[in-house]
Image (tube, rainbow, N blue to C red; front, side):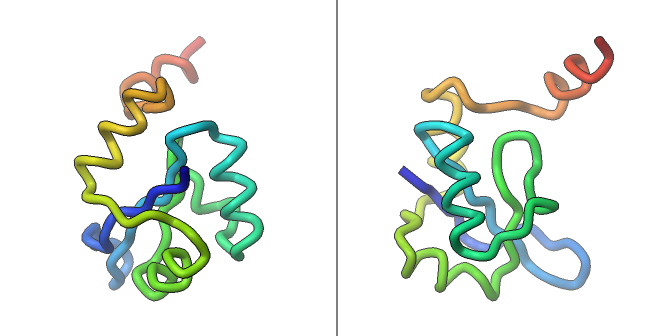
Length: 92
């Protein structure tokens, strides 16, 4: 299932949401590509998407959840990749 949290993260004079899958990275990559989310938005285990894309992504099938619910779903699926883990992987 594709999940999206509310736009709440301020960066570059905008608010941002996180778009993720509780199934696989392949699922979220396919959904993102099909709905115009650029690859540069990928951040370890989710896409950062601007607030102005939120409604269209929900209309396309992304399920609105809280930020906490999104993280819990990623962890439960074994897809969560925190910054520390990403740094450790890149150090090898």
